[in-house]
Length: 351
Ligand code: 13P
Ligand code: SF4
Image (tube, rainbow, N blue to C red; front, side, top):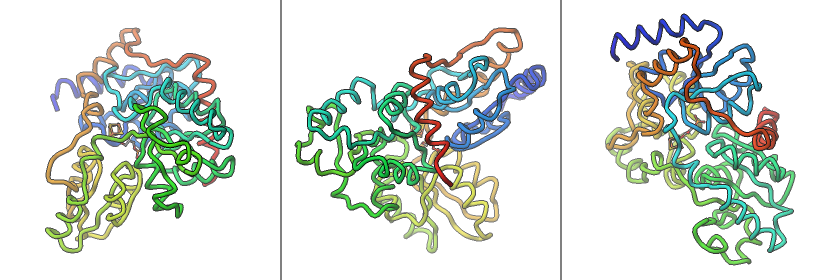
């Protein structure tokens, strides 16, 4: 990266000292991750944000829903900054509050809402987390989805899982022994979700029709292809991948799990990793004694994660040095209150 920008970022961070804390998600660019005080998956970063009450400014190098969650989990005097406001998440955008309220009305009319617990993946707007908190549900991440679902099924008989169909299906079927028939897919663009009243009444798991377009690029062919090219390869994927991909993989887990697994792997072992490319490239560089490759032949960055580049980070930090707060992310008090209930429920899950 540009040596001038590297020096400016270092100088701005030094000038701000303890006042600033920089969080970096594992999908961030190398040029940005080098300035992170802590790196992590969504769960770890949420906990880290909550554990830094002395930092006046939290600069979140990640995407919008992560910065919103950090704002909800920090105190009113702390300010959360997203270096580029256009760093969103297309999956989070697939569940809008009016659509989810509409789905809840459908379940209410059928008389099943009171037995249904809403569970939302962290990758959702603060509005959706607020809805879930108001209705007795919980937030989950890719590292605790099973525990969150187990908790939810202690509270009710059914789950409405938002917005990632793949994480919901993969967790229910591959980790909790559900059958594919226990799950139905609710399409917010169709009346009644495109489902019959019987389907909605019978399903144990109502999956929202959302997905990650980055992880959606991996297919069963990608897995079969790498297995034929690289004998003995271990296939390690994120649970946002399609069901057939996760089913065919050897191991599945969050970004933090993927890193731990590769760190612990023996020298000489071969790994095809199905997740975002910045992380896979960093793993390959960090482990020259292991054969680490991207699961698909085509490259696949998360374009919104990549929006946070060094120029944006330098700008956000230098604004703070100049006494200005640019790109602050705030969640209104009422939404934050209810979203916090659902986030705190996640943080209180056992294990
Ligand atoms: P992790 O919680 O595994 O870091 O995943 C976050 C994410 O957005 C993956 O697409
Ligand atoms: Fe969203 Fe997918 Fe990017 Fe994660 S990788 S931030 S789920 S678009």
